[in-house]
Amino acid sequence: MHLGPRTSGLSRRTGRPSPGSCKYSMFFFAMLQLLPLLHFCAWFFLVGVYVRSVK
Image (cartoon, rainbow, N blue to C red; front, top):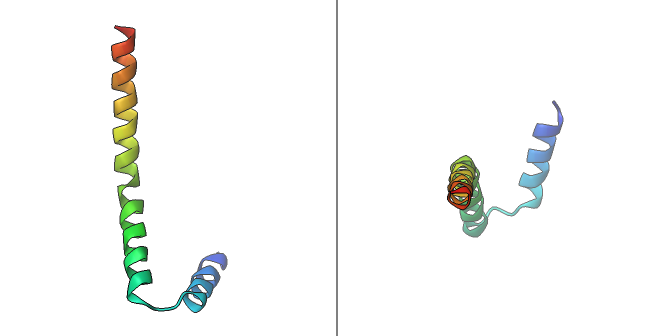
């Protein structure tokens, strides 16, 4: 339980506050949010290819 706050504090200390890093973190967060959707799309695509190959 303590690892969360400690790691976040360390990352805040080491990471310098700059617009570039902020944009990168926002982009990473957006990718994290889209990950399930991308996973579902890839799974659906693979299933479609498998069904086509079986037929």
